[in-house]
Picture 1 (cartoon, helix red, strand yellow):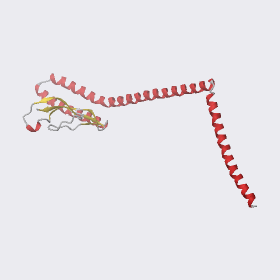
Picture 2 (picture 1 turned 135 degrees about the vertical axis):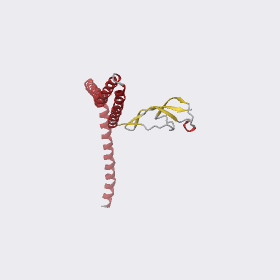
Picture 3 (picture 1 turned 90 degrees about the vertical axis):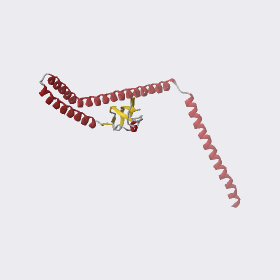
Picture 4 (picture 1 turned 180 degrees about the vertical axis):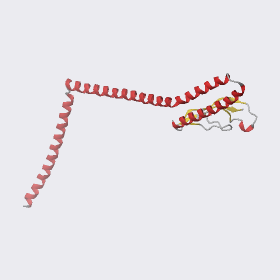
Length: 195
């Protein structure tokens, strides 16, 4: 029996090797078939893939155009809302201008009284406009005389001769205020620098 077992062992090893070789050959034949099929691509499949590519490309272009149209619509809507909120302030300014025209036709005693009323009206208009802008996320930039120039927030219009030594090479005058929209600069403050 020992002799038989010894003869069986090599056979089992040979069988294992033969199985592995067979598997390797089967894999090679499968890949060669695949390669043969890809080499033999017919016009019908080329047309199918070409048409599919063109459809996908057209769909992508349509989506891009639709998104651009939607983006412009949202911008238009946002601008419309902002403008509509400012129209009452414009109406108030027009009424103030009408009041100024009426004051010029009146006597001197009434002029002084009406100028005071117009000044109060303009203060109210400014307060209302500031409140409306604050609600939209716009805030006034804090700039004071004597501040150090910040090129990110200040635009120098010119130099100004100053007597005080502490104003030299610093902001000597604020010509127009700067504004931030949601913390980002939308308009720099226009300033004069002391010389």
